[in-house]
Length: 103
Image (cartoon, rainbow, N blue to C red; front, side, top):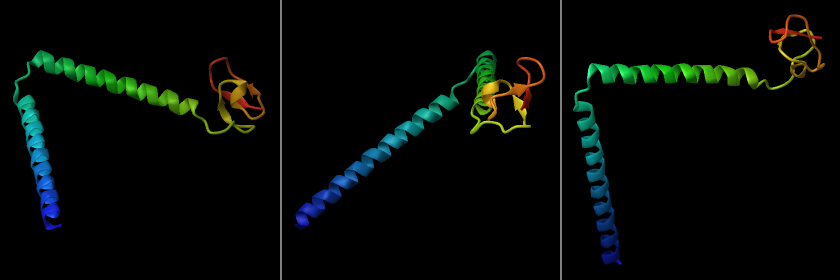
């Protein structure tokens, strides 16, 4: 029984050492990547791509927020675009495509 317990402890210690070596290797790879020099052109290109991605993400989030109304809009509420947005199914006033009132 004691031998089995010692064998289990030995396996756990080997596993921990292996994980530690793996983490050290990953950290070394990260620091090597950070230490490499980057040209100004490449840095600006990556910055531009990141900025464009942020802009697209912001635009995507606003359209989702507008589309995910929990319920229909009650009568007298400003903000409908189509009759389907209103509980009364009557979106009136204004021009097509602009915000109107629920009747």
